[in-house]
Amino acid sequence: MKVELEKVAPKEIEARSFEIITQELGPHSFAPGTEAIVKRCIHTSADFDYAENLCFSEGVVEKALEALRGGVSIVTDTQMAKAGINKKILGGYGGQVHCFMSDEDVAQAAREKGCTRAAASMEKAAAMGEDLVFAIGNAPTALVRLYELIKDGKIRPRLIIGAPVGFVNVVSSKELIMELDVPYIVAKGRKGGSNIAACICNALLYMK
Image (cartoon, rainbow, N blue to C red; front, side, top):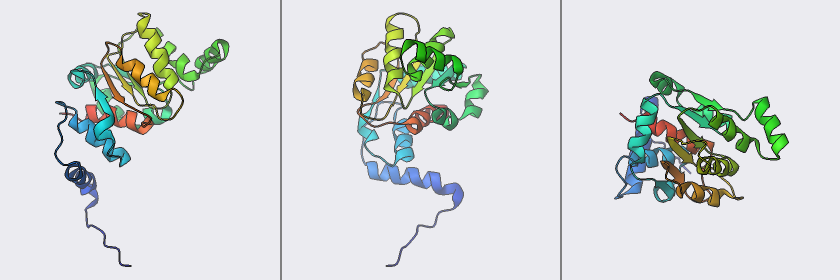
C-alpha cells in the first residue's frame, strides 16, 4: 500500500490544519468571537464535538479579553494546564499563571478538611483577594468549590473556563457553573482536559 503525504512546510502546518478544520466544519453559525475558540479546541483535540459542546455565556469573549488585557492572572487546577498557557503574551499584559496544587499548605488544608487538593487550591486562590480567571481542566471538585465560594460571596471570577474531563461529577459540576451570573466558557458533557483548558486561554490570548 502506497501512502501519500501532503507536502507542507513546517511553518505552514498549523495554518494548513486550520484550513482543514474550517473545510470539514462546513457552514456553521457561531456566536460572535467564539469561532476561534471552537477551532482551537478542535485543533488541540482533533475532536469536532467541540463545535457543539462548548457553551459560552453572553458576551463572554469581550469580558474575557477585557480581563486578560487588563493584567488579570489565571489560576489552573493542573501543572499541565499551567505549562500549556502562553505566559509570554499574558505576562505582556501584566498577568501570571498560578497553580497551587503542589503547595504544601494546600496539601495540609486538604488533609485537615478531608477535601481534594483541587478544592483547597480554589480556597487559596480566593484568599488572594484579586480579580482572577480560572481555567479548570481536570478536577470537578475545583468547579464545585468555586461555585460554593461564589455563592458565599468570597470571590467573583472574571471568567471561569470549565473543562474537567471524566465521569464522576464532571457533568453536574459544569452545569453548576452555568447556573451562575459569572462569565464562563464550559465544555459541556464529559469531554475536556488540561489541554482544552489551556488552549481556550491561548485562543483568547491570540486574539487581535
